[in-house]
View 1: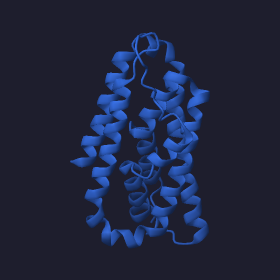
View 2: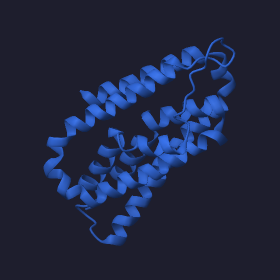
View 3: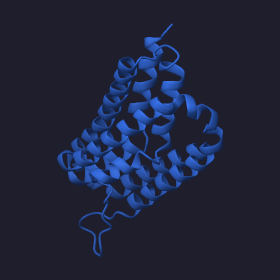
View 4: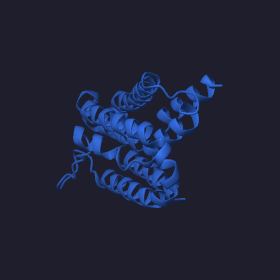
Length: 196
């Protein structure tokens, strides 16, 4: 029997806990405001939808080959997340001298492409469909509804983190270097947790 409480707990906890999407959305919004960071959030939405759709379609087939490709995907995902952490760590306050390293991850394309190496999203989709959805629902309409639910919940989590970054942008601006170090460390933690 389908466990609604387990399903909702899992998808909301996964969508609202720190991860590459949420940390980048918050960082982008604290730098550029919510309105400008919304492009990144829309990119996350588009990429997230594609990954969740692929997870639903290929969940049964991937179940057999996941042990083969999982280490490779973990390495690629961790490397990309570490690169994002490095970009955040190198970002300088706006009033500092010298060339400013621009966080170009604040665009639609980066938000979208990031999903294809974001192991958290890939495993989220595969886990949700293979363990919580497909054992109970196999109809096209039902599976499509779950794809939409997962995508909307994921998007809402990313937007909440972006809003948080925007609301506290003045505080973050005063403590930008410290915040960048914390965000880079959190992304580093995400990368390490993916590998081990």
